[in-house]
Length: 336
Image (cartoon, rainbow, N blue to C red):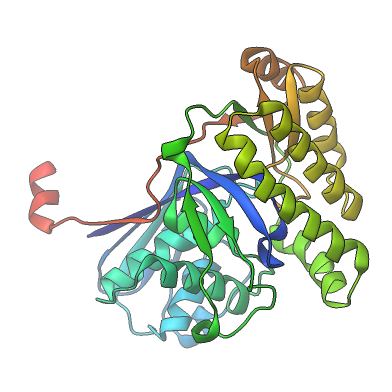
């Protein structure tokens, strides 16, 4: 049996410029996706929503359900004759702006490649993850989630030179700079508002505007990317007032380009009125999760909970990225 896991992530600053040659700072969360794959007589895929047996080539086409991730990966590898049981589990909130779907994709991709006997380094895995999500799942997406779920940790990410999507073999790699060894504290609260969204639906109109040369989008995203580069200095120097200013500016620009959603804006306002120096969306937008910089976490958490926050997730700056373990059948039998 092969077991692969990958973490979700929260964007601290710079989102959503990862698809526009921008820069970001993001941190893994403790919640992870987990995928197991083992030999079987037929191809079976299971998750919390049900079970599918893929028999015919038509079964591998996307059907708009939670099995499309597996279908897309297997189509890419043309693994139509695979005989295996693939089981997917995740404790990352669904459609919450925390890269839950991409973590499942990263875990499944790692498990399937290991099962097929293929070996790729992490940069290629991250690019392949994003390539499959864009071209096979038809999800408009940037690069942050693919890199964060693959590498894990607290990272400064630089995507300059990756403004325009290219063929997989022509893509340059992003810069991934681990910051955790240099950061003593992360005074953030990450709250899931309960709003669900599909990030591709949020990205698509903005991507179209950017490609059409919309000056507001182009200049806005240039400024947000610059805020992230300034934010790295503020984070490393523990200059919380400066980082708060930059995060709030990030939110202001992004909200001016695309409405962040009434519930999200309300939660951001609640956080700022209850101890938070800054608050913004932890993902691209349209729903999901906010991240607040606060030196009074108990006060901020209490207020957000009273305002309707459904769940709080913990940052994990030293979390491993995608991880693969091979468990021999003898070990499984002994454990049972």
